[in-house]
Length: 127
Image (tube, rainbow, N blue to C red; front, top):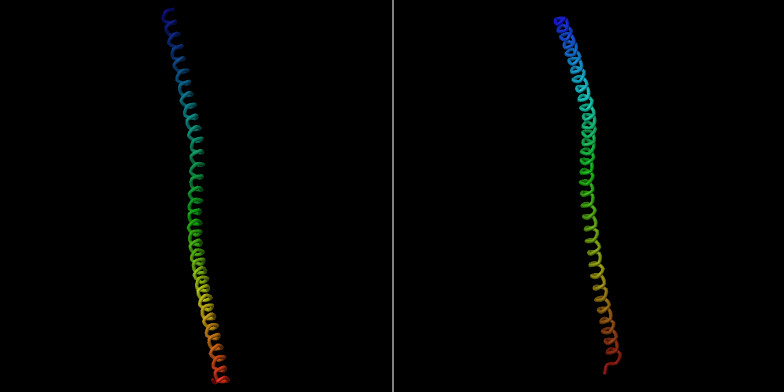
């Protein structure tokens, strides 16, 4: 009887060990699946972040190129405006020069008229 009880106890212990081993394997498998699912979920987020970063880098590069082109265009416009301003100044200088010559010519004309009238009067009235 004692030996049958010992065998029975040993059989139950073996059965429990087998059940424990089975449950341990199931727990390990479940934790592996959970870890795999978490890693996949994280990888999806990381992949999305990587794609977003690539897009941001491309857009930043494009923005830099656009800003550089804008700066070049702005420089060209500034040069064009400076040239235009210089041309206007020169035109103003020419206008002042022409006015000055016109005034000088009026003075010369008035002087010649006075001289002509005086010389005519002298010729008509020789006293």
